Amino acid sequence: SLAAAEVLREIGAVAVEPLVAALGNKNKSVSAYAAMVLEDIGPPSVEPLIMALKSKDRRTRILTVRALGHIGDERAAKVGYPAAGDLAELVTDIDPEFRTAYSVMKTVLTVLSPQVDAAIALLDKGIRHIDWWKLHFLQGYSYFHEKGDYRRAAEQIRLAATLPGGPPYPP
Image 1 (tube, rainbow, N blue to C red):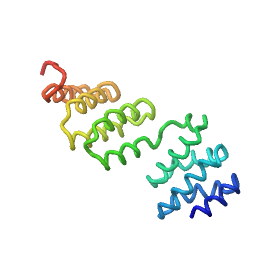
Image 2: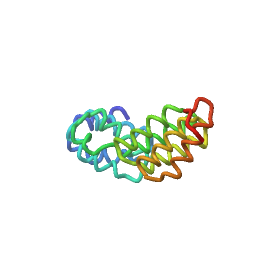
Image 3: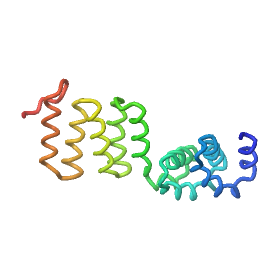
Image 4: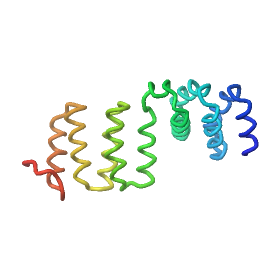
């Protein structure tokens, strides 16, 4: 409840560990309030939240990223973006045809994370839902640049060139 959240906010740093544990609560209201209170407590929450990024529970990791983002502490930035794949999956589960999510998150997953296999899996998911030349092109780039798989890279670039709006590469 809002009253309980206010009491925990007042307690401050002593409440951090139980609040981090509450991020995994099955009751979505409880876990959301826990994230908000951790955000308000601020810097004392950072280290336990960084540890929570390793949770097996996707919702816990997403709430943890949100809390760390709101706190804005340098320690969190040094960890990188381990939950970027979770966020990409969540957004594309909600809207599997959201083109921008695939193209932007491919870059986040390969440059900022780095989670190359997750980026390739995300692009595969996008290709299953929309036949957009850019997804094939990005997939080809990933295979070429990040994986060194030149055969698969050539296949994807060739596919990109055959689709409407695709780049004019020779087949």
